[in-house]
Amino acid sequence: MSDRYCVFGNPVGHSRSPAIHAAFAAACHQDLVYEAILAPLEGFAACVRAFVATGGRGANVTVPFKQEACRLATRLTQRARLAGAVNTLSFDGGDWLGDNTDGAGLLHDLTHNLGCPIAGMRVLLLGAGGAARGVLGPLLDAAPSRLLIANRSPATAHELAGRMAGVGNLGACTYAQLAGECFDLVINATSASLAGDALPLPDGLFAAGSLAYDMMYGQGQTPFLRLAGSRGATRLADGLGMLVEQAAEAFHLWRGVRPETASVLTVLRDGR
Ligand code: ATR
Image (cartoon, rainbow, N blue to C red; front, side, top):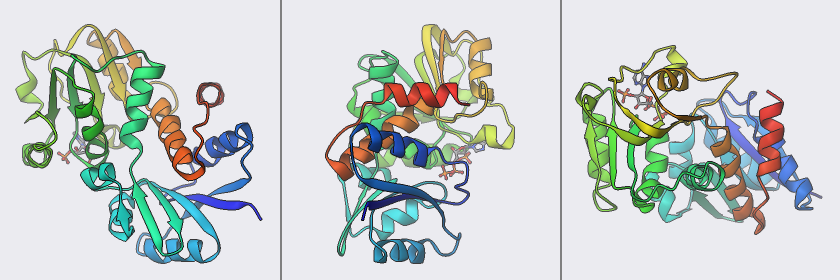
């Protein structure tokens, strides 16, 4: 029987992960099945247990269960512990390893696919929720000359910066406090566009040659990328590349082989 994997989420019907992992499995000649499972909002743990009881070997976890998955894992990788969130679970009997491949996926997309070396860059991260927490450690590891978190609620941004204080040097501020600042890379980790809101970003934020990166993706250009383009960002990228790269990291963890991602990304981009 094929090994079973899945993604848990709510909602999960829109997930591209089954298509991505099916493409990886075919390319790497791995015998596995990967499905999307809608977990009830109040029944995530029971859903995971049922999956493991019926032979589940690993799972991806998406909104809104990443923090609950972190509590459910019996063991955490260091990057998952730092993020306080798990997007990848590996099951081996009673051993449930929780990992977080989001940051590695983002960094891989930035450096390998987009040719954006983080070292020495002035980097601004917008947002201080789960998405931001998942990528801060790997971003700091890549040695930017400056890393600043801006958030609507200043207390959340300061709390996050304080939590990461042992890992590297980063600051926190509000959007209004960004006036007069300039960055080479601006990453949107907020969910503002889900509410149809534009972020109140000051003029002059995007340096010449800068890259605006939205961890969100969807049909057409995201509201953040439209805004960034109109404010002088030279290069625009959405989060589809990060999605494929975090999946490749998870696949590597489960199967011991890292799949080639470029062709899968091309198919996803052409198909939307
Ligand atoms: P999660 O932790 O699940 O990712 P979250 O805690 O709601 O979700 O975080 C989402 C991020 O998007 C936060 O940084 C949030 O800002 P606040 O901490 O101020 O709430 C940000 N965000 C969501 N909607 C926003 C909006 N309309 N304008 C600006 N920022 C927004």
